[in-house]
Amino acid sequence: MDATGQNTDVLIIGAGMAGLIAAKELQRAGRRVLVLDKGRGVGGRLASRRIGGATFDHGAQFITTRDPRFAAVLEQGRQNGSVEEWCRGFAVGVDGHARWRGKPAMSAVAKQLATGLDLHLEMPVVALRRAGNQWRAETTTGRTFTAGSVVLTPPVPQSLAMLDAGGIVLTPELRTRLAAIEYERCLAVMAVLDGPSRIPPPGGLAPAEGPIAWIADNQLKGISVEPAVTIHATHTFSLEHWDRDRQESGRALLDAAEQLLGAGIKTFQVHGWRYSKPMRVDEEPCVLMSQSPPLVLAGDAFAGPRVEGAALSGIAAAEAILAKRRV
Ligand SMILES: Cc1cc2nc3c(=O)[nH]c(=O)nc-3n(C[C@H](O)[C@H](O)[C@H](O)COP(=O)(O)OP(=O)(O)OC[C@H]3O[C@@H](n4cnc5c(N)ncnc54)[C@H](O)[C@@H]3O)c2cc1C
Image 1 (tube, protein in one colour):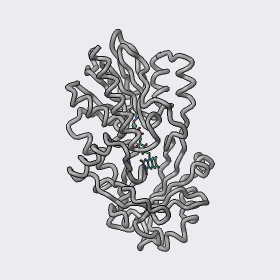
Image 2 (cartoon, helix red, strand yellow; image 1 turned 30 degrees about the vertical axis):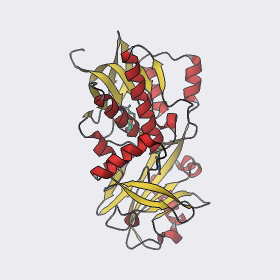
Image 3 (cartoon, helix red, strand yellow; image 1 turned 135 degrees about the horizontal axis):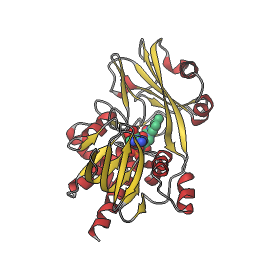
């Protein structure tokens, strides 16, 4: 460890679902774990925001599970009160499969998972370097962190940028494989209404056409006291409008939603998700990039473009690190 640095067994970069689950698994196995995130809060794309008395989920809308390992995580969340069932499907396509929401909102799922972890927020990592038989992460704040193993969970292009800045050389095959992982963009509008919307219960709808991919009534969903809708634009609309004035793009989406809103707009904000969902998922649940010292890439680009996929990738990353250290 250098004079300004902090040393640990495993450094996890990213406190979204993948990073938090990996951290929990490794901590449970007795490893000293440290988690860094560039954000002011945990959760990454498990995101919620308040505007006055209105609450919005503006990233992931609901959580589903098919894998018993992630079902166990959700069950724990249900028991500790951070997760509850929202519904069993929406107007079109009630399929009986449970959709879970965070309680009081989506970010609570991540906050609960982060309990008991050694977490450093507002710590953007700019470079990851080899330092002898360890890894050294450098942040924009001038802090350094060294560790025997690292799990990188940001969206793949952001992880690659850190590796490139640290002079980590990838084989051409691996670079081609990782560079092929592209993400949809998503402009998300959060609007406070002056009355209830016309979105039917249980409060979510995916229009078949037009610029809106998804619209949700956060009051019907049970997370907002005031009438509040979240609108997610399609990838096509988001890409086309990415560099345009966000308020104007938000207004265009609200106009497109007029029939479903049925109420006046008190105020609205727009958030841009540059890395919303991976368009292509890698064939492995995580990538062990270096055997010694271990370096693993994880996140939803590896085990599925959903919250569950991110969690399963986090579990796979923890297993990969634990397997290495047993050798
Ligand atoms: C608009 C939208 C709607 C969605 N809807 C659903 C849905 O309904 N159901 C569903 O299952 N999934 C949904 N998803 C996908 C789901 O949110 C993701 O699959 C999942 O949350 C990804 O988790 P992750 O841990 O892989 O990545 P992330 O949540 O992105 O976590 C990565 C973390 O890395 C941090 N980070 C990045 N760069 C750095 C750096 N340089 N230094 C330090 N930290 C860094 C970020 O701040 C972030 O916290 C949606 C996503 C979006 C954006």
